[in-house]
Image (cartoon, rainbow, N blue to C red; front, side, top):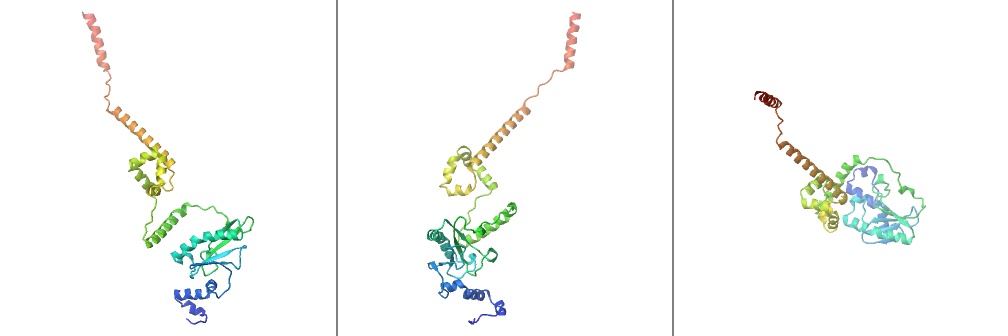
Length: 276
């Protein structure tokens, strides 16, 4: 590619790799890291750099970026992303102490629709104080039904995490759903008895037993214990009622005296009284 800027027609015929290279060439943040554009650098290591924003929202507003040109977060190498996320919290503390400020907002605009204005991925660390006037971080709430979003969103996130973990040679460990959990409990009488009679011991075991912890993730053991007690009581009552009904059906029927025979015997006795 020549040093001159390509025409619009040439850009349309570029491969994705050529487009990425052109964006990198024109990226002001890559030029800052190359020393071609001056900046107020506040931190740098082998994977990332932090500079003061030249158009700050408030005093002390800094930008944190990967050194390798990357447009959006999903394209950042995992090692670099982990390094940045691990260290952003320390940079945030440094901003609080250095400005100083009460709190900080760590802000990511990932993509144009989300407000990203730079072709280079950035973290914003913004010092915050009461009454600073930055109300854009408090979007208005809306009354949106969660039911219609729950299943498609849950399915999408699970598939995404499974795909990522497969690349890392790992398996996604998920807690069972309610039906599966009910089957597991029903097939393990000792576990059921422990939940019913000693829920505190079960909770204690969960602290050290990872399988139990995963199995009952998000489950209130005390409530589960109460529910199981109610179910067992209902089962016992139903069994007693069925046993009582069965006994009644099996009991011999009492025969009522034959009224005609009774009347005949009475007449015979009276007749005998007068014939003797």
